[in-house]
Structure formats: structure tokens, C-alpha cells
Image 1: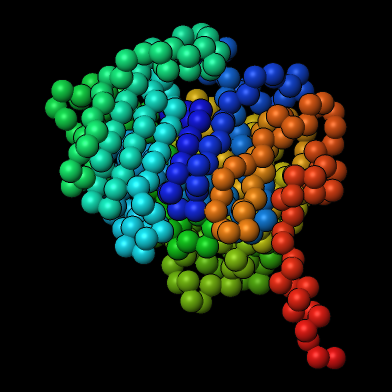
Image 2 (image 1 turned 90 degrees about the vertical axis):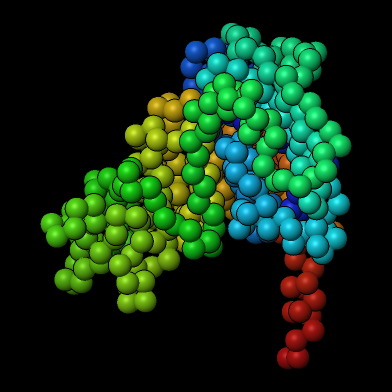
Length: 387
């Protein structure tokens, strides 16, 4: 599955929000082939670095994308723990949630418009066109001019599951979509770092990542006693067992740093990409505790592996050093939150910085886009402290 555009209103902090994952003018210096494998004129941001200050919306966008993919998988979205949309309705934060997304499967491009009320879905519309070797803009024109394959409104709103995907006459659509849906999200600070035991952790990848994140680690080996488990060896003789589901055997006694624990999840995501196990990977702030040069090298490895999938990898960060990397401007998306806490837009540098050779890092550091952290409260605190 490939995301091309999403529009959100009243979901989480998003208000009349949209983001575009396509581009028109390809950089001749791009290290990534960013087009559909079968239809090369259909270009999209295959690798996206989402940059912004803390609490600017990077994690929230990942949750919105995950919310949409769970809906497309036929799940009851009211039961998604991180979304907690019932709470939004109960507190009056949301009136009606509106979502529109354009995505493609193996053979078709879909547009879905969805409206969700406090008791369930109240409106649901689907459009579909067959993929061709055309640009995204031409596919979009065809989608917008086509008749919907499904359109229902004024539902009583008693279910948070897609009516379209659960109806018997739409089995072929459901099969087509769900066959393309493989996705994995790892959110910052969430205690959800379980991995798919069927994919597991590649010992060599885990070893190289662990040793880079923690210089006191000497080796990583496979457990003889429990197949699938890994053993991390330290130079001082200490050992840590990593279970085959990615968890530490005893978190309380672990000597692994936060950064190294995050590195374990990085190793799994890298292995999942290597094995072409998922079409969408969202890696949220998993290198915030590591050195900037480690983060850049890890990203280079992801870029090397990304051609294995016809999908997308999203990585969030607040490290402006990533702007020094040899990555096209259109692979960066800059986030900022409004002063009232809402998120209404992102900044797509390629639409603002017209010349590819202009240094994006300098422009960001000069805060031309107003994406720098707001320091007013810290300045007030400093001024108010008694000396």
C-alpha cells in the first residue's frame, strides 16, 4: 500500500489538515528510486523524514496513518487504544471526524472519504481507478471524475467498522486492499515494542546495531536453550536475553540504556524491510538517545534497503543534522503546531525552496518556516527565578 494524500479534520489535533506524499520534479541526485515499480511515472515519497520540535505532531501523524490502515483492515477503530476517539467525543474535543485518503494497492488507486460521529460512521464514500503508467495528478483527475464504487450517508452511526469492506458484495475489494496492507508502527515512548515472531530479529543486524548503540556490548548470539531468543554479551561478562518477541527477559534488571533498547526496535524494523515483510514502516523517535552520526548512518542503511518494498518508510526526528544528508528536499516534511495546540498544515520544502542546491538546513536554522520551538515560557521562568 502507498499513501499519496491524506486530509484530516477533528482527528486528534488535526484541523482542516492535509499532507501530500507525492512530488513532481525528480532530483537527479536522489539516492532513492521513488516511483511505483510497475508504473514508474507514478511518483511518490517512498522515504519521508518528518522533522519538528517535540510535540509538533510527528507522532500524531503516525497515529493518524495507523488509524486509517486499521480502518482499511476492517478493524473497529473505536477500540484502537492509542486513538481513544470515544474520549475525544465525550470531552467535546471533536464534533464529527472527517478523513480523506488516497492510496494505491497492487493494481488500483482508491480515494476514501469518511465521516465518523460519536456513535459510529455516518458517511462513507469510495472511488477506484485502475493503475496506469501515468503521473499521480492524472490518476487523481480520473479519480475525481469517476463515479464512486460505494457511497452511503446518513447512517445511524452504530458501528465504527467500514460498511464497504464488511459487505458481502465487496469481498474482492476487501481482498485487494488487505493483501497490500502490511504495516508496522513503533511509537515514541510507547510500551509497544513487540515484534512479529514470524519475522524475528536477524542476529547479525541486531549485533551490528547493538554494538553501534552501546560500545560496552561485545557480541550477540542465538540462544541454544530457546530458539528465537538472542543473547547480548557485554565486555564485563554480563548477559541480557532478548526474547523472540523483542522484549527483554527482565526489564527491571536490564543494564541496557534507553538508546540501546530503542536500537533493538531499529534492528527489527531494518530486518522487516530486508525481508520485505511490510509495505508501511513508521519509526518514531527511535534514535533520539543516540549520536547524530549514528542516526544518519542508520538512515543510510534504510535508504539502501528501501528498494525492496513498493511502499513507504517514515522516520521522525528533531535532529536538524539530517538536513546535511544527500537526500532531496522533497523527502523532508517539516512540522509545527499552532499556538492553540491544533495542527493545520505541514511544510513541504520542495514547494518553498525552489532550487535544490539551496541549503535546507540553513533555511530551517534561520527559522524562515517558524518551526523552531517556542521558548517564551522558559524565558519567563528564567527571568522570574530569584538570584
